[in-house]
Amino acid sequence: QVQLVESGGGSVQPGGSLRLSCAALGNIERLNTIGWYRQRPGEQREWVAHIVEDGTASYSGSVKDRFFISKDGTHNTAFLQMTNLKPEDSAVYLCNTRSWPHGMTWGQGTQVTVSS
Image (cartoon, rainbow, N blue to C red):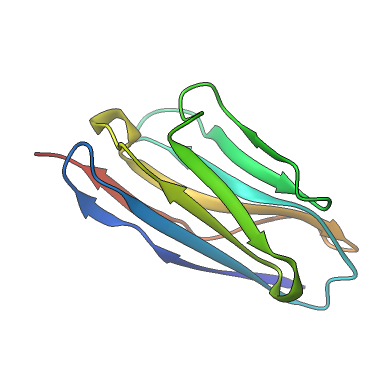
C-alpha cells in the first residue's frame, strides 16, 4: 500500500508563489510517475503536471512556464513550485502516483487559494 503525504498550499495574492510537496511512502518497487491534478468546486479533476522515472516533466498548457515540478528520487518525493499564481489557479491540488506494484494512488489534497 502507498500513502501520499502532502504539504504546502495555502493562500496567496495574485502574482505570488507557493510550493507543494508530496512524499510517497510504502513498499514501492518502482515509481513510474508522480504529479498533481487539481479540482475546482463543481468541475472535473484537471491534470496539472507530472514527472516520470527518468526525470522528464510534463505540464498542462494552463500552467506551463509558471509551475515547475521536480523530484527527489531517493525519497520518492516530488515538489511543485508554483509561480505567478492567478485566481484561476485556486483549487484543491491532489497528488497522484503510478507505481509498481500498487498502480494509481491519490493523495487527500491541499487547498490553494489565490485572491487579492
